[in-house]
Length: 443
Image (cartoon, rainbow, N blue to C red; front, top):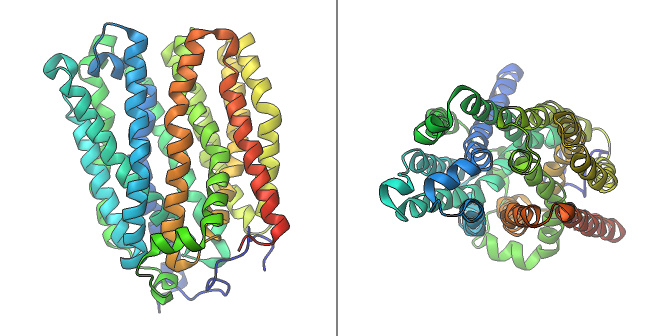
């Protein structure tokens, strides 16, 4: 086994595979694989455009879609709307994951981006509380649930499609799943910064908040076209098909689902914390909105550049040690960095925290995709990846913002509890990986 392999290649994937498009020139194959990266990145753009905007514009959304009687209650309701779709993700993971394992990754990717587009369109056209009362929150919730369902299956299908492009470069291809998210975070942060800096609060609340969602609708046709031009991977076409992939992966590979869930959890909580740092910095630390977003711009830029590099590196060195090294660094530095931000609530402390944590997260994400993809055989890979990711996001992602907001608002002195929660997750993950190493490759 090559040194870059994580827990061992999945059954049937050991040997280098022929081109996913037979009888084409090497240069054309390279162009095609970049098209694959672009196709998966477009859906990530739609997903994270909706996700990051909802975090950045949480205060504005609270005013627009919920009763304005109590600011904190409205903001909690907004974050609850953010959290509820995470409960829908496992449903999308089960249905779209099984569909991808039976009918192909391409077919599932087309369905998922179609549903994402519908959710984004609903969000862009959503009426406000002032127009339709409580129905405004219902419309937003429906849009968010559509996004949650589609994202539940999108992750596994796109990750499987990426890693099956080249067995010897799994780390590099899988890393683009996360690098494209970082790129989107940078673009969305630019949108949000422009809104706050270029528009008055009245203009932002009146019509400005819709602009980024409308921009997302312009991306969707491009993604649909690119995905329609893709070809199923040789790996998938050569693999046997399972009649009940979800049942089979749960019964036969539940230890791998647990392990993959732990691996994803390492960076998930920290990522969500970084996403909501602008809201925290504005409301509690008193930083101006147009300045606080620079921290997210910095973290997104670091991850966008570093994640593919780490993915490439993980194809040549043992990616397990890269992942564990970054996790230990996060464990040691998270609480001190958070404390520094509380003691010195300035732009530079925010940027310092964002830069250090983003670098460690980038190392984690550069290794994560290939490691968890190797845990599942080709015939069950999408179901296994989708379920593992959906469970992690449902358990950790949805409630994290609400938990931190409640703690932050009630008592400035105990804000560190959110980080301590993250530390418990990292410790739990490390125990899972150590146990897997002791038992072999995890298979």
